[in-house]
Length: 112
Image 1 (cartoon, one colour):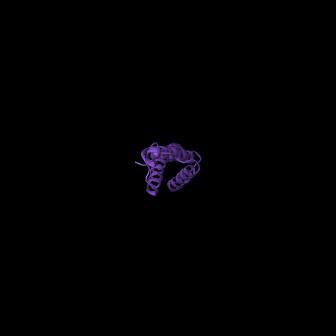
Image 2 (cartoon, rainbow, N blue to C red):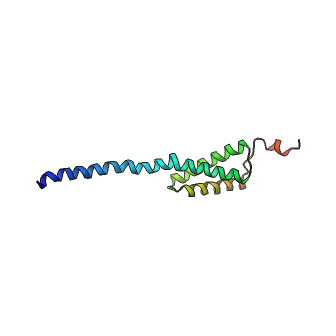
């Protein structure tokens, strides 16, 4: 009887190992499909609350945040708050070093 039980135990062990692989892959998928986009939107929302920006600056900021946050994900970061803060820090550093210019900056600064 014990011989009859061993093959099913091996099958159970094999079956348990098979679902583990998709779960491991699900974590990066969740980060790329849910956590990173949420961090990008949160960082952009905070950035816009600090000072009103025109649409061209928002588009540039979104591109910068997307590239940087997905770069952080590629380096192994999985925490949404760290991704958000990292994106904001990077965005503010770029803004400080190389002003993100509005497409309408000349119009906004010239007297009407």
